[in-house]
Image (cartoon, rainbow, N blue to C red):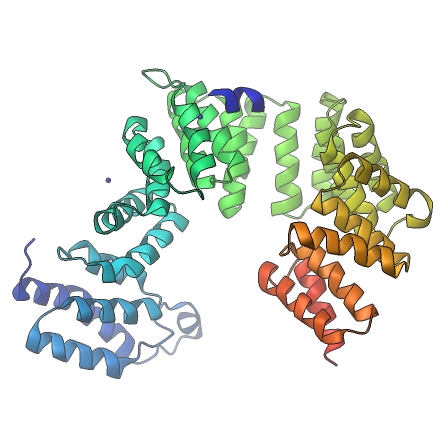
Length: 444
């Protein structure tokens, strides 16, 4: 499937009119923030006006507008105040009736477009990206994002924006991939065309484009179980709301692929490891030669701290495809991160992965971590430094390097590296959580 998809990939500008906007938009918002706080505790907690606007600044601004009319500077100040309030709908309404946008409005337009994309408000995002490109036609990022939006609505209209984005080295590879898919589209796109585009967008981690492409396929064929599976997975990545699609796919076709993505949902979204194991076991029973299913079962058992079972499943994945570095990488990371059986079979398994891919950052990190746990200071530092030379900002590598620095007596260096991990990943899960705990320990 993957090889197939890779082969194939839019009033009046007057003081009186703005006075109307002020009455209709600004005054109600200001009043909402000036009125007394409700006595109801629940309304205090849930009210969008819980954080007050800096009223003095807003009142002063509106007084100037009343005397002088709206200017670009006043508009930007108003938008800034509303944005600080978190009141992006007010900014959006305000900008939508503005006919004299300037390059100074670009930060506002970017904030609005990013908000619309995060809310999956594709129409509003399209409008703001078009406004950005009217002000800055060479903006590669805006061209690329607009092309992704248009590709799932009117593919031919995406072409010039893809060509503009391709001028930037940052987007050239992605653009070539998408252009290749669109070039294979039928005159009237088929569900297969849309599904192929969706799979490519998944590979590019362009979740919004992927969701729209799979939705386009389902509009044409409501029984397309594969598009339900993939859209469910994509929706899980966006907002964790893919279960309905996955259950629909399961009802249409209880295949190994469907069970696999349902298992991912239970493990990563609902964090129901028992349900994940049950579903993934069903997937494996339907497709017992698929190393991805065995590896996913290994990951699920690892999260449950059932390391012996995890080891068995990871090793099975490797045995099913011994030359595929993906499963070697996962098994190596398991042994290193769990500090499991390193003095017996663990280190040998990591070394096997290293022999297969000696410049793989994750495998180098696993080598360094293993030697750290085995108290081999020189080997630990050597492998971790090799990994950092290739990818200096890898959070997992930086975490283990911090542990090594502390062991060598460089507490401040360790704290700096741990702080980077927390800032990159957040303090709540995975290596971010581990780093946050280490910072607390070292700061006592």
